[in-house]
Length: 409
View: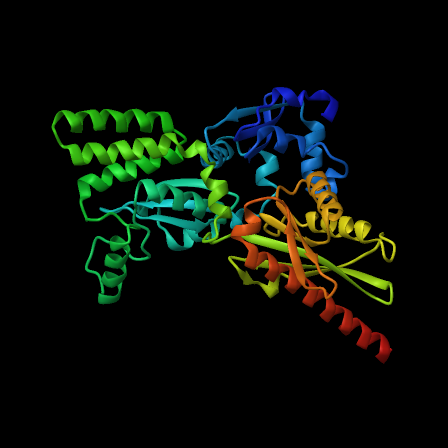
């Protein structure tokens, strides 16, 4: 399949899943915030280098792309997992080490717990009799945890490391009651009511939101008729929350929120020795904290000395060649509007779906302004500046190390 074979105007600009097919055979399934933008990203130059040779072959072999729209990114994420489990597409199963897949285990207990586990943990930590429901595989553990965080706001559930059926130690009892008090867990141990919570969450993970809504609306009417207005009001809030997930694409926003557990920022910078031996660097900030173990350095091979635009293009392209690294939600670069616009184009070309901001420096190389025009520049200002300064510091440290090495030699 080639780009000319698709009419992108017919692909909806909405959340959902997309499916590459060859005849009746399903080759690959993915999720998207915008189906149109995501599908378009597969038809760029050097897709084999950007994604992988396997993905390039899938795109070439596919005869058609189909899709299923959803009301939200959350539902797209859950539907993607369901379809991968159903069809086991070669593009999904061969592109990832099975041991790194993530699953959601619902335990077979009086008060079932919802636990995120790796493939390798399923057999080592869970006997078949302990698993009541199993959902997955999920390619991203971070996305799964974010999805559960959203669902928890509507249906509080238990995810303790210890079972709740027996006697709790003083430490476990303290943890349990504290999480109850802040709304992470249900307010009381009511087996009948908690069964409904488990049912509701299971229906969501089965991609049966319409069934869940009908069930809750029926129970709401029944409670109102019985004049149990408190219960009716609770159900009304749950129905409203489920119907309005699509209004703000909650999963995407959850990953962007300042208190998210997986908001990743990457900043890129360059360094060289008297115009030679240029290198590009990448710093990583997660949740406002620097993660030096994930910093990377790239030897610039093609860009000429002093060509900042070409160097930045090469850094971003080289970074995109590593899909095994978590992709950023925000990219930070040095420079003005021209650098910013160029970086945006390169990120689109290589298929990295991330916002971009640039840090403008004054004559003393101090941050003067953040360009980008998004709310992220405000909500993540301190992290942006930290990422930028860390990239510069890392670039300088590598520059000095290389300089010392050149003197020794």
